[in-house]
Amino acid sequence: MKDPAKKENTMRLFVAIPVPRPVAEELESWTLAHKDRLPFRKWTHPHDYHITLQFLGETTAAQHEELQSSLKEVRSMPLSLASNGIGIFGQPKAPRVLWGAVTGELDGLSALYNRIIAETRKAGFEPEDRPYKPHITLARGFAGGGDMDALPPAPPLREWEADHFVLMRTHMHASPMYETIGSFPLARP
Image (cartoon, rainbow, N blue to C red):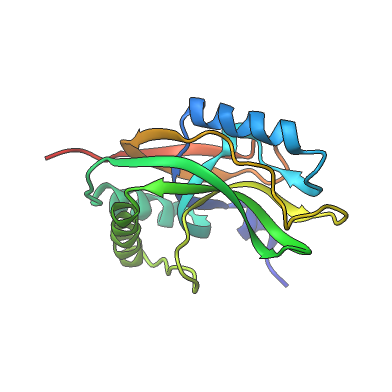
């Protein structure tokens, strides 16, 4: 059995690129307009929209300090990104996740992901064992009864420049549930 005191001394963390307010507002408008047609149990709060770079999991205070130092070593140029489309993970009859597509400088985004993985590995973190697929999670937990073969048209294309990435903490069962606890610039040389 796990020690409950140990769980209290950890934070559930991940590294992400935040979605700027105008993009989040566009995605929120789209979800509000189509929520009734798309039966998912849990909708992401618009303040929680982000592009995950690395899920880190339960992290101790000592690991958190080392992680902050490691993330400060990541170097990358700002990235031109866009929210451009809607999709699902899973089968159309029972999708796991409804997401907003990310386009733009995806090679640069993958390079940033790889740099973060390299630096966090030095702090003892291992990447998830699945390919990196950047997206913005809109909803989870299909409740059944909808037609996911024919998704509504995507919201209008929204572009932005990602000039930083963040370290986020999860507060389970809260809404919004993510708190930024560190910010790291993406700077031109």
